[in-house]
Image (cartoon, rainbow, N blue to C red):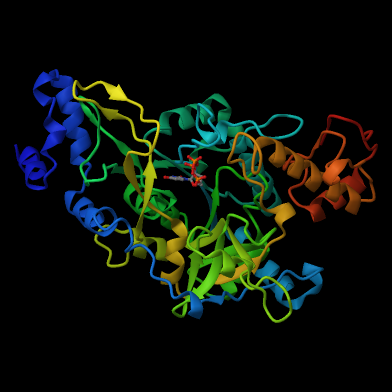
Length: 472
Ligand code: UTP
């Protein structure tokens, strides 16, 4: 069999160690899995990232590194000519049906430790809505406001695809037209041990892990999702992560700047909350816009001040982008000359012992290969960055406790709602760290930004009592 020969030639024949002991269906399953492995890509990654300890990954000349320029957030966006123009252009593009939204939801969510796709996690303070429901309602609200269908691409992985689809259908797609929700799975990569050998997870299965959020570019092309967007005349894709319910996924200002700048990929930056905050940094390296991760930027640079005493590298990346459809095609098409680099991550990967029994290791024993979507920025023509306000953009659920946890996220949602109430002239009592003492929630179906909230609230007659559990 050719496959066996190919694996032998690649020095990976150990994956057949238990082959003769498997029944016919298990053998077929294993062969199907092995067919997905691109052995030449694996050889390249082993050479680049495993055999030399991963040192080929980053080659940054820190002394030459510059902070990336960005469109700063004015006090009053609508009074600022550039922002007002962007809003007009962005709103027209939305009305013209040029926008799709795109959530990457193929991650494993190991830090949260939730036993289902992360998008099913309940996050809102009063109604306990899931992340997926919050996004669906933002889409519904914008569709109504702009009188247009806004398709939603949902990237899953083979691990959580069936559960994700089931969740949507059990919840009647949260009121969306199911033809406007386009699911597809990202790719998987084999995990290897420190010698570059594919890890056998059990007698008839190799360890395969999702290829990172950057895998979305290939997956959009391969799955036909991109063709579907083309068919619908959509050229702008609003990209966001599944763990952040605050994200403003249909933002006319951001879209307007992206279009005006003829940008192939645009990003939102949030000023870092403190010098060593664990976010990527937007920088110019070798003349190109690049995100340098906190783990790659020496602390002295993370803390460096500019002449005015502000943090020099202040622009934090929070994984909010707009992608141009043709750019995705250029990078994600099979055989494309441009491609995202892979990174190595050392992880605990379950493996088969001598007898073929699966063992869960208690320390990292293997290497996972992942692509990051922000690595597309240096390849994009005319990339644009605009500043966002953290309180209206970013509060992810990453960890079970502590920073970026369900509790901090719920508090940040309540703070956002209280701010909107304040703009409408209503004071919500605040406690420690300005967290509202009342559980309150504003549905995106009522208003999905401060301006719309103030208008809607003003017109509400009679107005509801401000109390614990208030839900609008
Ligand atoms: P994270 O980096 O937080 O990873 O993903 P994760 O897998 O969800 O969580 P941990 O690290 O295991 O705790 C950021 C975003 O990228 C998506 C996630 O679903 C999340 O929206 N992602 C990540 C993918 O879609 N695919 C991947 O392979 C990795």
